[in-house]
Image 1: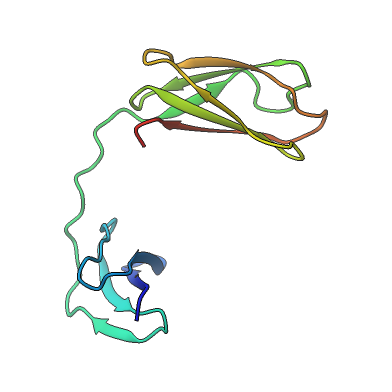
Image 2: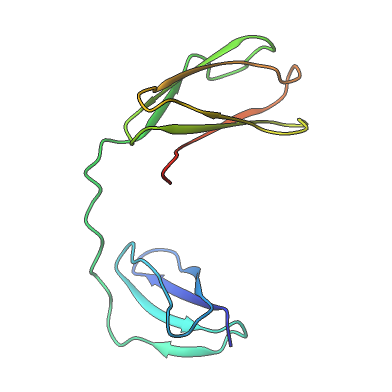
Length: 138
């Protein structure tokens, strides 16, 4: 009975359960480490465990690491600039800024060659401010 989940038992690691689909003929999942596999339905009924370990892993990522640096790592005063610089990854980038107790988030799309952004902090004093960074293509 759908939906279906993959139970992945990593050798020497922590078990993981992931959603793999609702169509029993088109389930999808990506291996991330050597493991033993089992499939269960939404009622927890097992389809059984495979007889061997899976060790075929995706090729390692050869792209440069994606990093973000900032001019402030502690308290950012209200109205102060927060200089953010992105290195690695593939532009263009999208930045989402979220402050505790704010009515909404701020979304910023950088240009195709831009890798830096300065945000003037509009959050209330003493409020947590978080930046989430990703490339627009996903």
